[in-house]
Amino acid sequence: MFNIFSSYLAVDNFKFDTKKYKKEILNIKSKNEGRTVSNYAGWQSNDLKTVSKKFTSLFNKISENVKKIEKNLSVSKELRLHNLWYNINGLSSFNRPHSHPGGVVSGVYYVSIPKNSGSIVFLNRDLDYFFKGHVNKYNEYNSTIWKINPKENECILFPSYLEHYVEPNLNKKERISISFNYGF
Image 1 (spheres, helix red, strand yellow):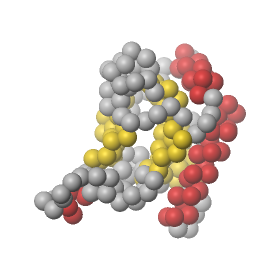
Image 2: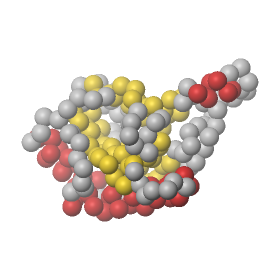
Image 3: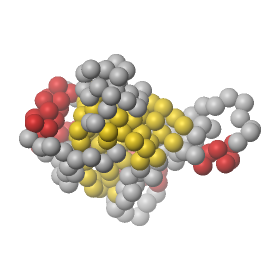
C-alpha cells in the first residue's frame, strides 16, 4: 500500500513458519544480554550485519519488496541490507519515538504478535503544516499520525527518516519482531 502519509508505507503478509523463527530468537536472547536503544524494558539484540542461514528465505522475500520500492524511488545505487536486530517486548515493554538515520528503507517483520501487544505508530508532523485547519476527516493521506496493528507474519516497510514508536505490550505473552535497515 503506497500513500501520501509518507513517500511509502508498504505492508505485506508472508507465509513463513514463525515458530522456528521464534525458537531461534529466544535461543539468541538466552545467550545475549542485548542492548538498549529505543526499547524500554524489552530486549533488543545487538546489530547483525549478515543474515543467518535460518532467516535466509525471509530476507530474500524482504529484499524482493525492497527492490520494488528501490525501483519506485529511482535511485542510482542498489539498496543493500545494512543491519538487522531482534526485538522481544514483554508485558509493559515499548519502544520510544525514533527514526533510523543512515538507512533508506527500514522495516519490521512480526514473528509473534499476541492480542493487545502494541501497535506501531508512525509520525509525520510535516503534514500538519500543509493540512492544518483544512481537513474534514483524517485518513492515511492527511494524518500526522498513522497506526498499524501488526499481524503475525506481516512485514512493514517504511522510509528510514519516518519517526515511529511501538505502543506498550499489554499482554503477558511476548511480542517478537525482527527490525532491519537497507541503504546504499
